Image (tube, rainbow, N blue to C red; front, side, top):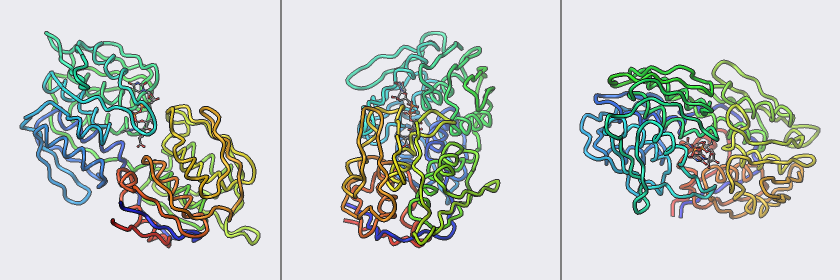
Length: 428
Ligand code: EPZ
């Protein structure tokens, strides 16, 4: 089993470039199913999940060619409408092919994604939205079968109980060629949704309301191949910002968008971390302080919320920081029901954390108390949390099951090495 070996206690110095966003690349890649021709996507990260999406698109008939960060995808030949269980169980974002397949082919058969480490992850909002557009859905042996009814899809008003990110993205891709106007209320406002809207408009779609929770889609006759640039990964950006705060030092993150991490930047400033922005870079520093190797951290509370609130995808990483705080931090996870899998592993490194329902009570143990240990990754962001703790800890940390990490972070070991961290990947 592949492991990441970290010799902790080393502050981080230097500059690294942020990659394209995983959670933008996946919907934009799926959107190429909407129209034939050669689509072009720039700044596409090379990740386990983007490779899985390419495999899925191939199963559906697509051809592709990659030239560094530029990916070209051709979907002239649609040879399938099914996303198989073997693939969907490895990446639940495969459900994002539902919307485009309904628009392009009128039918889709996609394995229910099933739960994952962080929660049940239902897709009922997606299916309810499709039904409002004139799609019949049924569950057959663990697969969702969705079929456009006689007369084709027609615009309607769709309301999300919770602003589902992939739910919003699926409904956008299903409504772009539906007859008439579709209004999506309580839509997700994450930047990745805006990036998808850019791509759909480049393909000829008519969408208003980008960046708001009210999206208006006017159906068009047909779409054509599009071109777009994947936005910088705000979760990767936040992960490295937190890593510097935890390990100490000073790092500049380039090719990123400071406006996409508003809540985290505010919280890190409250902790006492220094953050300076340019239009496309962020410099984070946590300098030596009164003889300590890193600046003192003021314990700070967070509550995870839909964008622009504090992202649930940075909760585990922030917790790894707060275990070094100067008092107590309350971390309230409101999005997923089981997103504290990193807690037992952090406690093995010396953290003092108690869980009470959806809240984690993190009693800061100050700097230089965490000790390296063998730990196991359980999901993508929990893995990042353990890496951050390992960087801050004294001694050696071995993070196993790092395939979780490789799903969403491009060359993390290489980027950390360039910042002076003592990390190595051991391939089993
Ligand atoms: C997206 O997942 C992201 N994944 C997740 O990132 C992220 O954590 C999540 O949004 C929240 O920001 C991608 O974009 C590929 P939701 P998604 O639908 O769309 C409930 C990562 O680490 N819900 O916004 O699946 C759901 O259970 C991943 O990169 C329903 O009840 O999340 C959750 O409580 C992890 N029914 C809440 O809504 C539905 O039909 C938000 O989920 C859909 C969602």
